[in-house]
Length: 196
Ligand code: 5GP
Ligand code: MG
Ligand code: MG
Image (cartoon, rainbow, N blue to C red):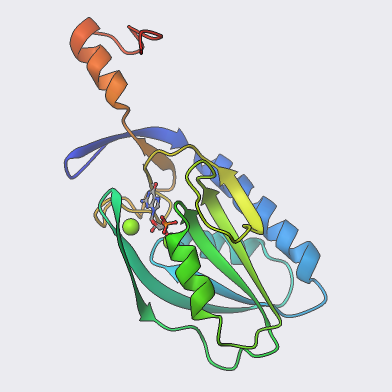
């Protein structure tokens, strides 16, 4: 599948993703069944996760959104801007952030900072995808759907230069080694184990 100049290959099916979403929703529900938490979705990437998470969440809850920006294309620009602020009147409430993916943790750091001058009762993070190998933050992620390797993915809300958000499945950027094998040997997987 091609988006702009890049080729992506299937990585996670709709069923695998929905199972992970339900797992996270049920874990949060178990911890918050005796209160009414405020879920805060991080736009734009988390919109599909937020929708399926709330459909799987069985108890009363509220929903709000924040919007930050840090990624351009495949890599972080290192600039995190706040485009939509956290909700008002959240003092004394339990806030659970719903993120699509945590990579370096820079965006998460900014999120924690955004809520640092509020008097929330509890602040937790639930992320559908988590690149644990490259996470460089201090905050422990409270709820994780699926740990994934350090490879760029699209689909299920996540974009490559704004394309791919509508895909129900998740796709991974095609491996360069795979491309080299195709060119050198004419078949996928050839030349495996020849790396230095
Ligand atoms: P971090 O600040 O943790 O490095 O990156 C977090 C944000 O970068 C995510 O919310 C997401 O918007 C974007 N991002 C990180 N990794 C990926 C990825 O593999 N695919 C896509 N589409 N976006 C990513
Ligand atoms: Mg995000
Ligand atoms: Mg993006």
